[in-house]
Amino acid sequence: MLRVLAVDDEEPALEELAYLLRQDRRVEHVITACDGVAAMQDMVQMMGGGERLDAIFLDIRMPGLDGLDLARLVGGFPSPPKLVFVTAHDGCAVQAFDLEAVDYLLKPVRAERLAEAVRRLEVAASPAPEPGQDDVIPVELGGRTRFVPQQAVRFAEAKGDYVRLHTDDGSYLVRMSLAALERRWAEAGFIRVHRSTLVSARHVSELRFEGGRVTVTVGTEVLQVSRRHSRQVREQLVRQHRGVIS
Image 1 (cartoon, one colour):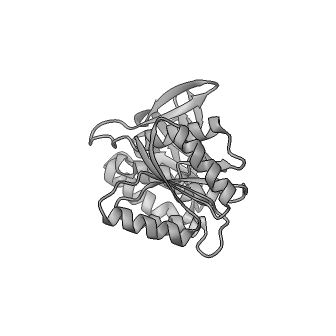
Image 2 (cartoon, helix red, strand yellow):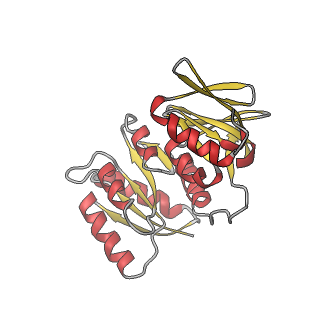
Image 3 (cartoon, one colour):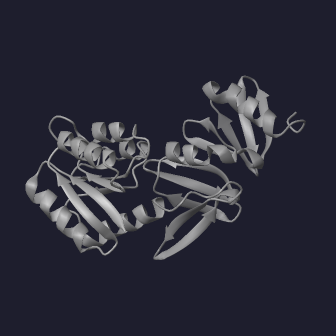
């Protein structure tokens, strides 16, 4: 059961959001705040008193402390609640997912779309995999959910607000930022080789320097390594593939 905070400076929108959240059986408790400052005060009071706060549903365009600024502050908490943005503006999605938002809803919010955001919160709130346990990414495919194991992913590419996961048996589009995936899988040997590409070191068969151009070979794909990442990529690959890279 989730305990959530809803934040919006427009009272009708806030009341509607809180009403819809309270109708969801997976939501245990809903509190509301009319701006970012009030929300921060509520969070400090709750968490300082030992109360659990699982998620924040927050608007972006608010006077004073806006939703993105509030999210950055929340990210500094020891155990920050998950974030879901609820906004009339679609131009901030990339920034939102860079802040590791679980979802990004556009107003007016439909009940079924909000229910999907709550489902994603439940998944995000699940315990992290234990060391040695393979992480799994759920992928929605036309009404079906496919679970893509981390070990099957050769590399990942940023595609706007999404990430495309490339595996032996195909590629899958997931709504999350590449930065969030990089943090999630850093300990599993995934390396940023370009601002838009993350590769699995275990699947890299070759690192090549040729005519000032640096590339890595992953399966049958030859991927560009940016100049700013080349030294770090080489060092990480050498550590993990001693004696393999020529």
